[in-house]
Amino acid sequence: MSFTIHGIQHLGVGVPDHESSWKWYRKFFGMDIPLFNDEAEAPLMTIYTKGKVISKRAAMVLNIKGGCAMEIVSPSTFKASHAKTNFQLGDLGIFIGMIKTPNLEKAYDFFQSNNGNVISKVIPTPYGHDSFYVKDLDDLIWQIIPAKDFYTNYNHPTGGTVGCSIGVSNMDKSLAFYNLLGYDEVIHDQTSIFSDWAHIHGGDSEYRRVLISQKNPSGGGFSKLAGKSFIELVQDKSKRVPKKIYEDRLWGDTGFVHLGFDVRNMKALGKKLSSEGFGFTCDTNDVLSMGESTKVHCTYCEDPDGTLMEMIEVYKIPIIEKLGLFLNVEKRKASQPLPDWMLKALKFTRIKD
Picture 1 (cartoon, rainbow, N blue to C red):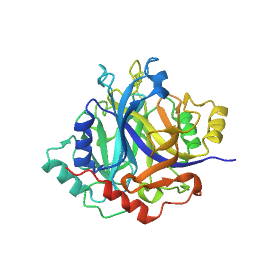
Picture 2 (picture 1 turned 90 degrees about the vertical axis):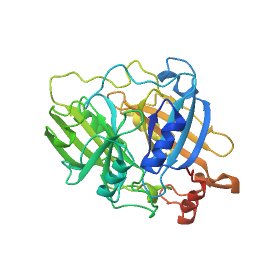
Picture 3 (picture 1 turned 90 degrees about the horizontal axis):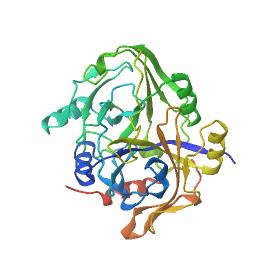
Picture 4 (picture 1 turned 45 degrees about the horizontal axis):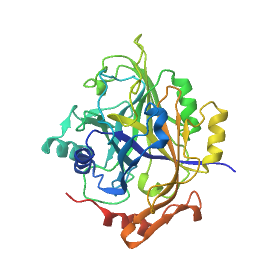
């Protein structure tokens, strides 16, 4: 039986203070709908937490306007902290998160008028559109990009996540890996010094910058809401040896901890990845229950530079738990989108500030 990777499900973000960070993401990114928000141990992650089982609060949140989700992870057995190293463009791992907006100028004005930490002007990218960059409460960098594929007209200046920028050491090896994950469309491939990175650490160096997406997205339950997603691969072309962003750090420390993908038929995917040299580094091996309402199968693998990819096969998640409304994916076709009434019912779970 073949496997399906529907695309990016979420971007995982490690933060030291769950409450304040999520409040910031609600205000600036409209991420106010929690699919789950629980505190639990993370036995799956001991390979990335120096052999110790940590506890963490994690919330999977989204913006009903459209876009992929975000998982906000805050360890409770230790305080998430920044690395002592000041990382820069081209360092190995996820360095920039991407958020989409229907109106770049309005989004820019919103961030400015609400004292958001805007670190660039609206400036052209090499991809034929403008964007601007901001930092969140924990100094993580986010690129705000224009898009048209929004699911609702929810009154927020931005939608949700739409991808991320990942530092790599060997572009060809990395392109082959992400092709395995279904990101097989090269939208742009350029080597240069890029003016839109002038305000970002390392932005005065030369990089090879490749933007990829999916040629033929396979659909899936949340495909209408998620829309098109992107991965930007960045290779430093100077003689500098790039550093690994999570070297000698714990999963859950401050930063972009992983990129999550929505998959069907995990076992077949595992066999394929293993045959290509990217086997699962950790695996729940069966259904992982997060309370009575959420049942998923989670695994992790690494890209050629050790950047963490989470694979999630969802079996059951709550839509409106208090009304007993759940999504049971096992009874649905892999490519079948959720009905609009079910997706739009998510707005009743919105957290309001």
